[in-house]
Length: 66
Image 1 (cartoon, rainbow, N blue to C red):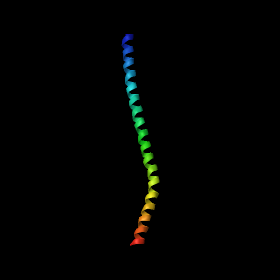
Image 2 (image 1 turned 30 degrees about the vertical axis):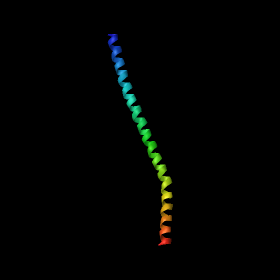
Image 3 (image 1 turned 135 degrees about the vertical axis):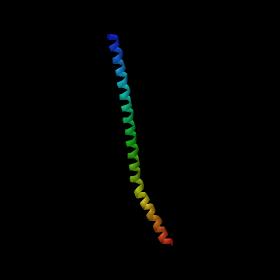
Image 4 (image 1 turned 120 degrees about the vertical axis):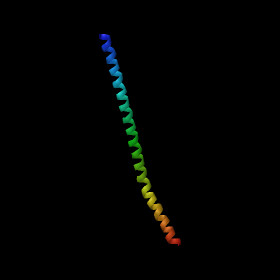
C-alpha cells in the first residue's frame, strides 16, 4: 500500500514539474516579447525626429533648386 502511494506521489510531482516548466517557459517568452517591443519603441523615438529633419532638408533642397 505504501509503495503505491509513493508511485502516485512521484507521478503527481512529475506532472506538477511539467506544468511549472511550461509556465516558466511562457513567462520567459513574454519577457522577451516585452524587450523586443521596448527596443522597437526606443528605435522609433530615435528615428522619428531624424526622419523629420531628413524630410525637411529634402523639402528645402527641392524648394531651393526648383
